[in-house]
Amino acid sequence: MWKFIDLIMRPNELVPDKSVLTYDNVFVIYTKLKDLDETFRELLQINILKRGLEQEKNTVT
Image (cartoon, rainbow, N blue to C red; front, side):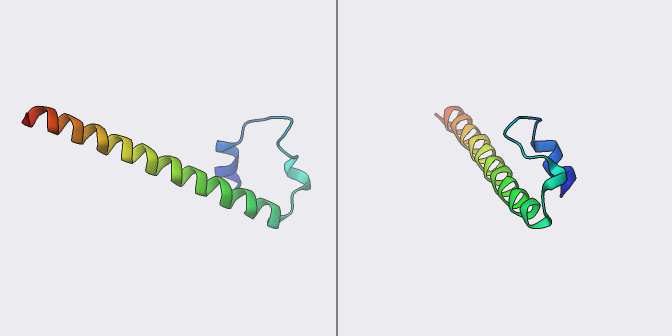
């Protein structure tokens, strides 16, 4: 969990000090970041598929 959080979160004054976070806090942060990461990846995949469909449509016509 910490590795994933460290990869996504950049040092910032808004980011809490990790040493004072409880496991419940970490789990909430992890869950939200994981959901956002998954949503971003799905949107990226949709964009790639749209681009492929447009290219296919252009080659057919």
